[in-house]
Image (cartoon, rainbow, N blue to C red; front, side, top):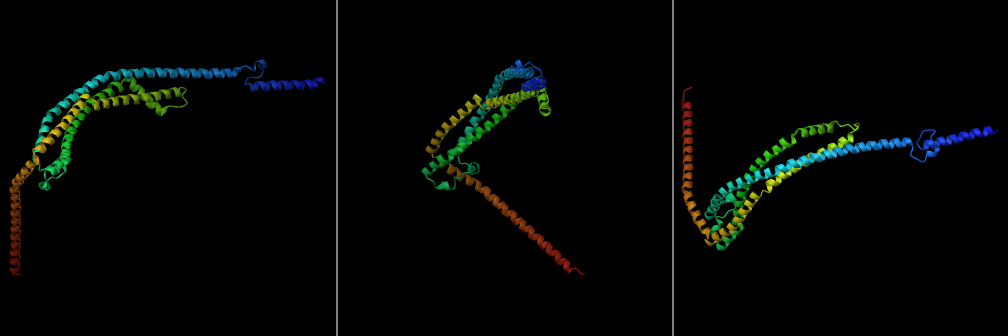
Length: 333
């Protein structure tokens, strides 16, 4: 009778122990006294994950080291080109400023000559008319016109000239900077290791598989590569633009001319008004009109003669046609 009760109790005890073992994540039959510690199966999984993480960290660390070395190479190459570029740019700026300097005296003479005398093409050149309404102007009106209109036109003369010089400067500068940009492409971008790297990552972007055990390492490498290439290109182009736009020789030369022209305008305005130069304009305009009249009369006479000749030819042609028609009508049938 006792054996009948003992067997079921033993079965219940074994079942409870087995359930506890399964709940702890271990195999059947482990010592219940060790259930409070981390099971062997879990310890194995944790160790495996830890090893994988350590391996990943090691690989990513190597990626960082490689990237640091490549950035150092770029800085060495880039810094080694800065001084030669600046020197070339300064030479270009000096040559351009000297060329414009040789044209400066001629420009100033032409401007002064044009504004000290009557200009028949003023309306066409500046889109402003003076005559014939200026014939009724007094001193006050002429002075006001010069300050309001003439000075604007004179400033436009200088702006046009300095803009032309600037275009020549930037054209010469771009030619020189294009030579340096070609060196960047040939000497830096076409290095063997750069070409291999670019080709590898461009292909990996198209073909990379998530099933690759090193997918995340390669993705990190690819992102670092793309960011580095973009940074290098931006740093290079920004440097070229800054050198072109901030060349001290050219900037200083422009400032010098602008300041000189500003002072010259003040002196010229005073001279033009003091000498009442509009009187010279008006007198020269009269002479210009008188000189132009014979040409106008000749042109009108030529047109009249041409018209008469054309009329005579037409009349003669009609008379001939009429005579021919009369003969045909009189002919026997």
